[in-house]
Image 1 (cartoon, rainbow, N blue to C red):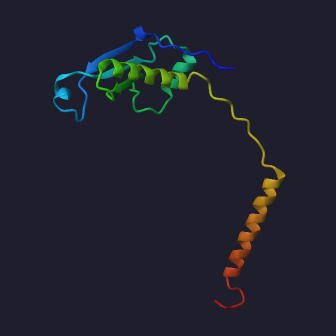
Image 2 (image 1 turned 120 degrees about the horizontal axis):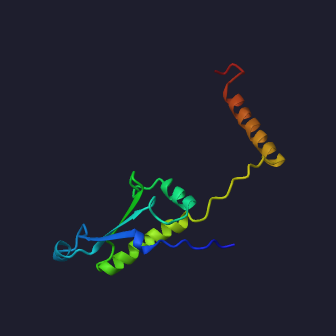
Image 3 (image 1 turned 90 degrees about the vertical axis):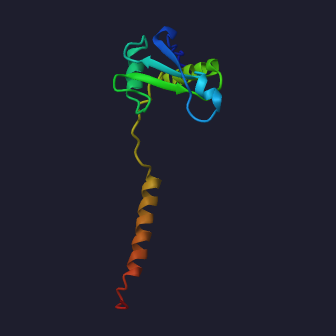
Length: 137
């Protein structure tokens, strides 16, 4: 069963053109090609469980106010950077769209218990031989 895709409302996304960092010659100093995407998770129309999972992420792009900030400056064109930022936002939302599965605790098998005990006894023998109980000191 494939979950339904959760779409982010474009009206809830703020895109700002900024100047890119790094090398690029004169073009970098005069053209605003990078994009800052800001998305307020708490004020969005996403389902509450998806909002909670997004806010619980340990992501440096998430501010304490619950605003997700994505900076896209990979491409030389503003449109490509805008599309890249929106794609990264969509990928992040889709990654938390499906709730995580509950873990079913399992018990170790008899074979794994026996292998563990065998390994412990072998290790004990190695250490006993090392101790020099015969007085060889």
